[in-house]
Image (cartoon, rainbow, N blue to C red; front, side, top):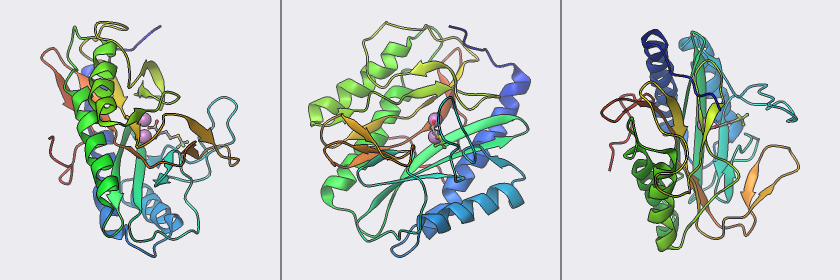
Length: 262
Ligand code: MF3
Ligand code: CO
Ligand code: CO
């Protein structure tokens, strides 16, 4: 396993890519309303990234080994959709919860971040799932520092959400990121303390727990991308891109609208 240590010059570029990614999430928030189609959200984000940020939406035509090329510029995962939801002509409706996942390439480097959005007023259960998932991501982030282990991150997330009756998706994980979208290491959102890779300053990876209100099992839809909960329970996800430092971490996907840490 080879996990790259980013140089100071690379880290500078990743701060820029991370900020732009987060600014797309800030920008799209006010458009997430009942009646809007996810295609419209995709178009708005695409135009901001390409025409204003002079950057590249990494998902568009992304085709990792064996996958059909991803057809859109963002991922929009609604309600029981776990991740990689493909924007469509379907309109959002009151009470939906939507994950919007943005990955921007700027000057050769990637930023990757996602947040949950409420369409009107969510149910109490939906809101609780989203808030818990946000806290879970932060439980993981707070483990990060040189000398800690990847297993510490997974354990912090799993041991927080499972006693609440939620489950952690196993098939998808966080990932190293840099000049490539998905690099080593794999960052599992479950695990045991003091196991796995030992973190070093200069590593950059995402933490992006997918938390289901019901069982952990997934189902892959026929479009080749959209992943849903097998039991059709609600699912939520938040994601940040994180730099490991000697004393802790730096969140790279930050902007004026980034929600405060809990
Ligand atoms: N942004 C997702 C992640 O966090 C990956 C999306 S791949 C795509 O890793 F092709 F669906 F866009
Ligand atoms: Co990611
Ligand atoms: Co992402």
